[in-house]
Length: 448
Ligand code: F6P
Image 1 (cartoon, rainbow, N blue to C red):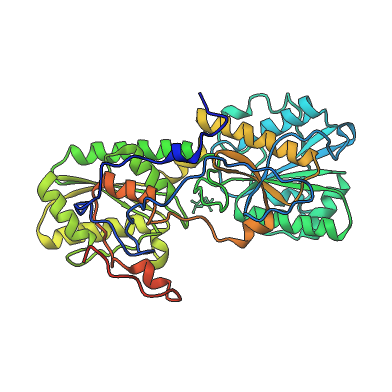
Image 2 (image 1 turned 45 degrees about the horizontal axis):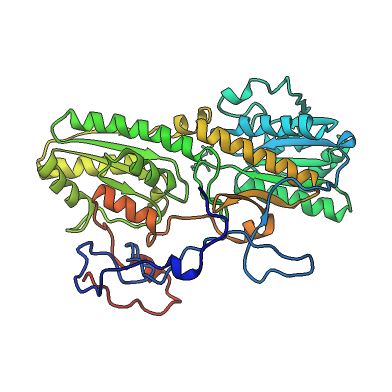
């Protein structure tokens, strides 16, 4: 049973057996902000209460999100309200679930007049393209949640906000739901600014979409869990191939333009991965601490290896990281006179084009319903987020003020990855700390 009234603070303290004198064998870092996870200090606490209530006059002094959910009084008169939906950017499992649940919530629960589906992303709001929107009735969206992709079509790229607002006005749209990634959200904010400049009352509400799970101020984005599940299947195949051959190496490249969340989570889900490479943690190929030397040792000991690499690792080197690694590993072992067989798998588009799994389907539905509640209440220039498992309203300017979310190599996720894979750090230990040159020099590491 979930406790409702927390017991007094004393009851939350943990009993220990006594002073600690033995140094941990884990060899973690004591340097803040390097690329190796730190130890956890006892003084760090997790708050029990996530919510706090403000009176109307009160200003929040702690950073907190407005809680999403249905409001007693709403802004729009449903029978006079017309909504529009647009889906932009790369595919992601669950887009159709979000579209369907928005339509059903708007029509069945609020009784709005009409829902329009703009085709091919913001292109569908470009008057020069003259793409007519679809009318999205509950019947029209009846089966779409079983399909991957987006029934509305998608596109990338910037469009003129003034022209897009002209189209919204022409169709009498009162609410626009924008489902997309960072570019889409910048577009949604530009549309909102133009609407405000014209003094119109059109709500713009975003639902953040990216399999990379790298949206700032949002702890989970839809489609990510499905993507991890699909990615794990590719890793399983790579593992089977590697195991079936003497000195077999399975190499899997996964999406993740700037962040390695899919690679890290799929590696953990698989538990057969020996090396996971993500853009947030640098790695060296050559040298005693480099990846190639590590692979030599791994093959000597176990005669097979599985490597997962995130797409974004190629950015710094300006290469397509999968084929690049394959080539370097193969030529290294040719030179070393060691016979290996490397199977390279790139499941990128398979991972993101399928339908949502059960968990993502539930999540998409909740995001969509919260988006409708927010829009009907007249909230605008926001996206629906999730933080500490609660649904939130994240102002678009706040979201845009932050860079994309990254794996923190000092925190739990990366610690789990290195513990599960057993991999060492393939780079200079203080690489990340060095990048932060404005900060004071790191304390001496307990590892060196
Ligand atoms: O942003 C999501 C994502 O899947 C990234 O992981 C990837 O870099 C990018 O989209 C590729 O998209 P596309 O091939 O559609 O341009």
